[in-house]
Length: 452
Image (cartoon, rainbow, N blue to C red; front, side, top):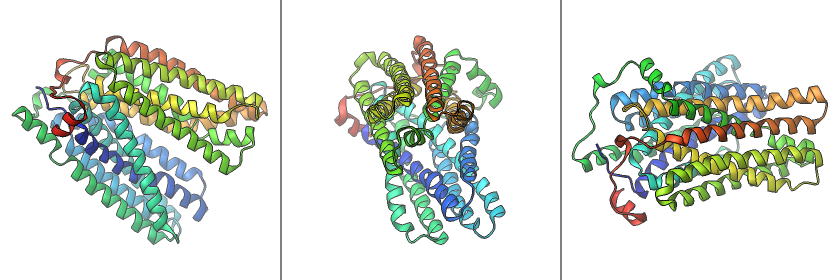
């Protein structure tokens, strides 16, 4: 069955879901993290473990994707996931406030709340990506992936700025109220964003997709079938290794700048801004390149995915070298290139994920996307822990901060090289089946707006 392709306005509507998702996540992983450590004087390990928990429970993504496959529709899982995420965010705010009076009870509630946050992110994110893959045609996927992720970053920025204004002067009650308002707004925005977006596509075909219970085996069998597909399995391993390398430097870059280059906290924070600017630039470059690639779209995404991994490896190798020649090294340049390469490979990989999700057994798109999402979440959860632990271990063994950071950066560079090799194998046969080729009419931005 063919489906009407979403235009730019429709893609932007789905991007609002990512904006809503980001607005809740930033409060729980940043604001509440700071409150626990600074205002409540609790160990920094506590929020670290809670954030790791929200990644760990996303191992349920394949199951959540399977449920949307069986149901035949994605929007109920997007809305339901956002409801769980919103309740988890509010619960986390209540738990953080409760920790001041009763730490044990507060931590118990926070554990439940962060588990809900992980489940909500998994349900919403998995079904959203599958819906984008089903409804965005090939020539727009790189640009769509960039737009959706930029809108999620916008959610981070808008919420952090607005919430920061209303949280002062700080009080536990203010934290609960501000989080509740943000979570409620995020849920309403999600409902409005996805309203009728699937039914319009079905109406354009003249019929609505109906679930076929007999076509769906038990979840374990469905997961085993997807894992048995060489391309899906290789892509999952690629996602895990590349995202492990991607997230491994998150928590060590600023300490590296301070310990080895002598940068002040303000200067190292600005350095993080340089990296994020590079990530945004890389996303935009790939979006433009993917839109202009014409019939070479798949080859283009292969080049950008592999090239982004190789350039990331080179940037990390330059940081390893910088550790031995500091401060006589253009640190800002290396960090910008790292961000540029990370942004390029990440968006190319996401665009490829959207393209490859239908390249296999039919009616397994949710399971397939869930498998890849779980690989990414587990890698992100492990990345920060592995990176920081490796630095501590190397520092104890060598007694030299320079050698410690250089060895970890070199290890991450090697992971990116391995990821590039895996990407090459994934793309050898990546033509999606006919069931994932979508009918489109018109071209360009104007045509897209007409069909949104």
